[in-house]
Length: 265
Image (cartoon, one colour):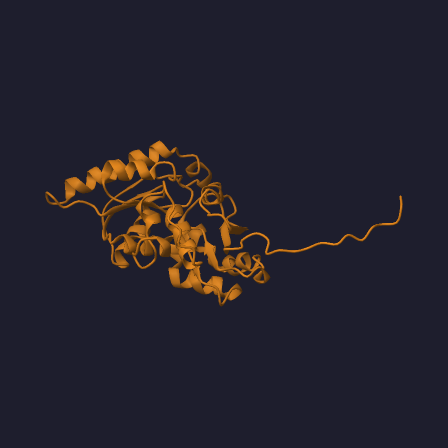
């Protein structure tokens, strides 16, 4: 071989020229990365790390993640210059507490805005002007009760809730979108039966980042006449808006026509 040639090169800003998102997902997640990858506008890139978590979703396994969050978030290099960091678990954010999750992320990224699916869902329903909602979950009765109680405590009125009562996260990731759509319809029907005539829901929350919903939201909204927001839709929307990306995105429901301040995107 002849002498090694020294080659010249140029550099640019690399991936994420509009926004860089740091994302912490559960060890066995199969849905968050896949759904959100289809969401990011051009120039927005997510860099992902994983946090240890058992497959069985119980109050105990969820609470155990609190001490692991700073370590997992620390695997996202600060040198990347993140615009926002997200922790992708709705139920853990609820049971640990939104403020404690925020504090755990800030151990690694003290100066970067952060969010989680529960914080994002509350922000989403605020932007939508929705207060009376239905909730669909895959969780146990205990974890679902925690979700409902938390939402009520954050100023939302949960009129009806339904669950698939499945604790295995790997099974939840394979629940079909049609099953989720049917669950949404049944919860709406239950709410309508419970409410006075003429008083309907303002929206439905599909809680859990493992449940797939991107492919059904627009049709459900057209049929039901109210917003339908999944954990991943709220989470992705909130991360984009916190990162300063205000694009309206077609096909994902009313939420993606709005900014954080309720103004049109």
